[in-house]
Image (tube, rainbow, N blue to C red; front, side, top):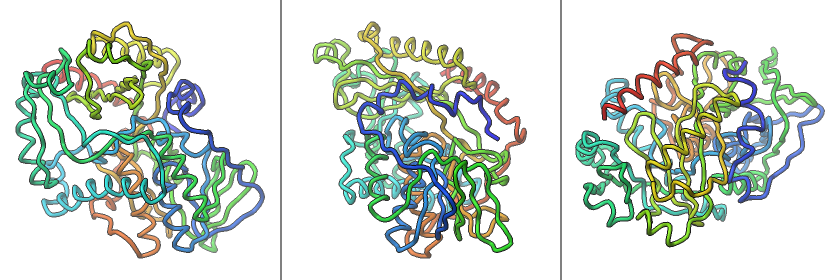
Length: 443
């Protein structure tokens, strides 16, 4: 059972993706007949493919089952921000949850996750159009600008980095000219990439390492027979595996396995891109920075100037996934884009698409054993920042299975908490959006 309308899991939301035009489509055959393996992985995104790569080169027989084709979900349609993140809880909240030492251990893992992706791109020879020296947060109000200054010491304490603060009067000189923003804070960790080129290269690397990858292989039933081996059934075949990894994030099901029921919350996000902008148009707006950026709103926007001078602009979408709600989201995206960048208000929007990010009740990621299910692991809930953390979570699960590799911080192995409304939890989104929207308007 999935939370959103069927449309969210079909071809329409991704039909207008710009990323799909930048990398060749990979096609893997469906699982057929009866097969067996050491480890079965459900989901061919960043988490599943990184786990497959690590396990395969450690000598395991690995099979990856993907309902569509590799990179079809969030891994092939996100904004391409490889940055600190995975948790949406601040340091004070993390400390309240697990204590100061465990909170700092987790935050070091966020930084490790960024460097993990950088190393993986280099190791596998993946050309992913990388750019941006860290990530820039832009204040949407004077009050938010004051709050940015307070983050400098916290970033020094938690990540050991020196962030660069720019007051409003310095924004234009640094290529951030917009009437929308009052200050900027750049954290020198992270980089931007083409998510489809990354996931395509990662798929090829996992394949070359020996992982068996099957597309159009939606798992319809998952059981654990008396012999203790997991049995995964698809429309055309079945797979028996000693170990199991669930790596489906926002595209999970409440019944695969049943433990997931009520423990994750998909949230729609949408992106538009412009045609390539001319040098004259860039100068007219005064936005020439190649930094990946996001604003300080709770219902945030994220945006960056791509290497080919297209502007990518993303935002949280409507809480439903219908044709009408998608149309309303893209209309709002164009309206917000024109307000942020008035000189580009009439520039053609060539592509638009949407997908699902995934939240947990504690706003922290999970990567650990599935309770009550021997030799089963899962990783999900990256709070909209899965490029780095989703990738690293795959390697962390592989290390948990083999006993070799990086340790997983205790915060990430805590069992996921259930949302209070269980299967009806999506109904809280209108209330959350309304409350966050009010706070954003107040500054």
